[in-house]
Length: 312
Length: 196
Image (cartoon, rainbow over all chains, first blue to last red; front, side):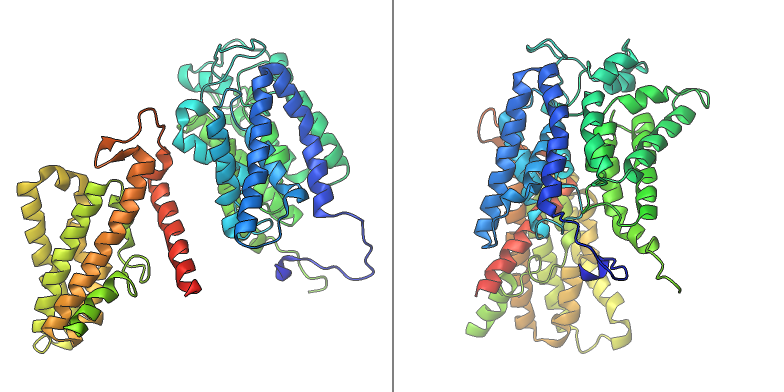
């Protein structure tokens, strides 16, 4: 770890920040999106969220106790993993599946590598991809917004993939989150509201979210239609998990590059991969796979974008 | 007799090809989706190992050192051809399930590794027990991995459903599941070894 730290010349000033504090602030920043999800999709979504957080914390505690390490469930990282996993699940996800995903996120996504700070991949996305590969039936059944019962509806991106047209849905509906989708990804307003504070405090820098969303927009604008430069980029920016992923999952400190230049490369890579999967891939949505692939590329990005020692 | 038993046992525990030497992982990853496939691959590889170990050990004084690898390959390929033809004749379903991985036993690193590291410097009887032990060790490892993968990934044992309404963890029967299961088992065995 030591050689990854960049120590600038003295004098140094302690900022009073800590991992725990930042984690809980990001957690709070995520709350509006979840609240919006519960309003849009009903109380069932709340159970999925609570269940996911509970199992993430329980798995973390159990594994740390079993391997005789310090139990650190109060540092907020496991809680965020649980919360983000729930945000990536459909509101009607069976609770046993939520528990399995939560356990997998913590156990395989994080603890096998040695815990917080050691994992290569974003744990919540590892859990989501695990569930996606294991039980696609439950992972692709979405409830209809504001109906509060068992009515299902496809996500706009799934409709686009199947029929070539996204159905008649306005940008406004997409912006407010009135569409089928995962719990935390639907309401763009709430996500942006939540992201404002950590962005302002620079807990998350603008580099990854901005380049990520912009690249996806530009790429879908160029290649999204039959002719060049005619794609519905606004639609692609507002649907799927793009905003959630760009602000809260691609910016994970552990699995994204350290330098500004590296983060820009990371964001552009995520954007291109997301657009490629959406336009030509087998899945309707590619945010989670794009971020995971760029997570894998993070060490090599870090190597080539290392800061130059001053004067050399 | 005790010495032969020692040669036999080392392939199963102390030098288990899959979990200790980490050899032959390609067929292990590829065919361990069901118990039947695992057993078929294990038995086929054991037969080839036994045959090649005995023949190579018997000819160890007449094979010129510089071209020993091609000679080993010819011997191994002969036994693999026997296995392949027998399998095609008597168990075409298994042959289809294992596919390319039966002919690929020719370049299986366990078989070649034992020829190069053991059979070419040991007596015929020792090589026989070494081959048997390694083969059985490989088969047991395959059975363990494929058993776990079949039960959790497909929800069946030997093709029969165990629990009605159980939604199997499908990812375990995919290639990524093979890597996961083998990785976790390796970690488990390393943990046991460290405790000793």
